Image 1 (spheres, rainbow, N blue to C red):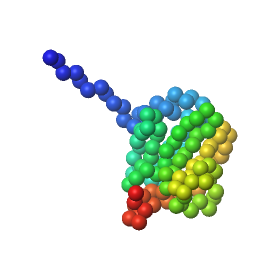
Image 2: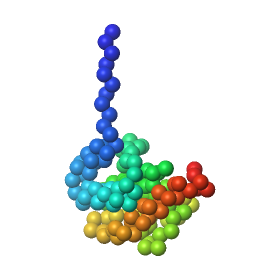
Image 3: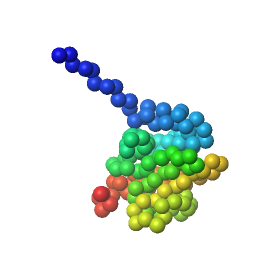
Image 4: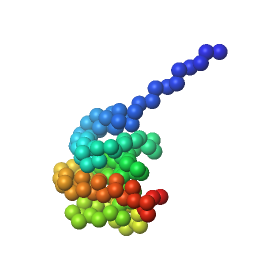
Amino acid sequence: MKKRAPAKIDSPARLIDARIAELNDWRGTTLSRVRSLIKQAVPGVVEEWKWRGVPVWSHDGIICTGESYKSVVKLTFLKGASLSDPAGLFNSSLEGNTRRAIDLREGDELDADAFKTLIRAAAALNKSPARKS
């Protein structure tokens, strides 16, 4: 009996590239931009592909996810309720005890500096021994 070669699994980075290309509209452009800002903010960030097609950025734990819907790109911070957000970027999932999200719609401007500060804070929170989950 012949053994089959294992199916080639694309890397998370390639899957995220493919998602951006597949979107082929403002959502792809937005996802590409936030991805770039995340990498700038935390150079050692790890890209993952979870839950059957959700880009995830991690550093000592999940920082945020990047989901794309018909009318919004949603960036969900799993520990967002524990983060300071002086620029008021969080505009979704505000009622929960843990998560917070940023919903970006077509034409929305994202304050790059405030976003990178939020990303760095989320990565730092993951390193905090009191906040490990």
